Image (cartoon, rainbow, N blue to C red; front, side, top):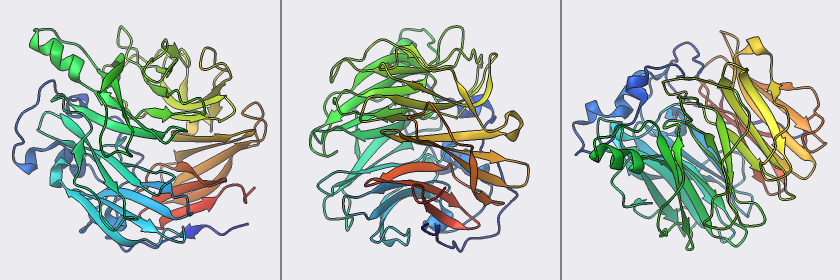
Length: 427
C-alpha cells in the first residue's frame, strides 16, 4: 500500500465546513444574454462568489485555491491548475507527490475569475509533453464569460498569453477537454450564442447550448465552433471523452420543456456529427434555477460508458451511477451512491477494462468524507463503498485521474492540503 500524499497548507483560519454552494439564488447564478464592457471589479460575478467563500486567504498559492485540477504527464509528473484570488495558476510536481515547483501565473483577473461551485480550470498534457490549460473569465456584471486557452511548450517554464477558444461575443463557460487517439484536442463548453441571437429578435430562450471545437496543434489554435446541442442547463459542468474510435461523447444536464433538468448523452457518429440525444435516466427534476452540480463521464477504451450524476428529481434524489454498452442507447438501472440521508454529491468516475472506480463526497454536518467504490466486473458488480478521506474544513470536489495505468484520487482540503491516493494499491 502506498501512503496518502499530503501537503500541509499554511492558510488562514477557516469558517465552518460548507457543503458546496448549491442553492444560491438563481438570479445571481444565471448568465445574462448580452455582453457589455466590464464594470468595476467589485461588480463582477466573481466577487459575489468570493463573498460566499467559506475562508479568507491572501495570495495565489495552492493554499488559497478553492479548487485544483490535476493532470499527469507522460513522465509521471503531476500538473495542477487552480484559481486563487483572481489569478489562474499552473504548476508541476516532478515526483508526483503534489509538492509543486515554480508556479506560473497564466492570467490575473481579480473578481472576474470564475470560481463558481461547478467551475474550475481544466488541464491536459499531451504525449509530447505540451500542457494545455482552459478556463473561463467573466466579462461583465451580467454573468457573461469567455473561455480562454493557454499552452506551455517548455515543460511549464512559461505559458502563452490566454486566447479565446471562440470569437463569438456570447457567453461561454465550463470548458471541458479530452485528447483524441490521434492527438487532436477536443473542447466543449456551455455556450449562450443561440440565447443571444434569440434575444436580438425579441425572444427569450432559457438555458444555453453545448458548443465544441477541435484543435490540431495542441490548443494553440481551434477550428470553428459548432453547436452540438441547442438546449442545456446554463450553469453545470459537462463530461467529455474521446474513446478509441475518435468520436467524442458528451454528457450534460439537458434543459427539456417544461424546465426539466435531467442528464443526457450525445455519442458522435463522426468527428463533427453529434448523434441523437439520449437521456441517461428519467429523474424528472423540475427546477427553474441553477443546480451547479454537473455529471461525471468515463469512456472505457473497450467500449462501455460509465456515468454518475446528482439529482433532486421527482423519481429519485441523490447521487447515482449507470453504465451503457451500446453507445448510450440504453443505460442500466440507476445505482445509488451512498445512503439517501448522507447528503452525497460531486461524483467522479474512472474506468479501464473490467476496473471501474467511483468517488463522491458526503457531509454529515461536521465533516466532509470522500467515499470510493470499486468494481472489478466492469460496473456490473460492486464492492462495498469505503470512506477514504475526511476533513472538517472547506474541501474541493474529489477527482479521479490516470497516472499512466495507475488510478489516482485527488482531493484539495484547506485543513490537510492536497491529498493524493493510489487507488489500485488500496483495498
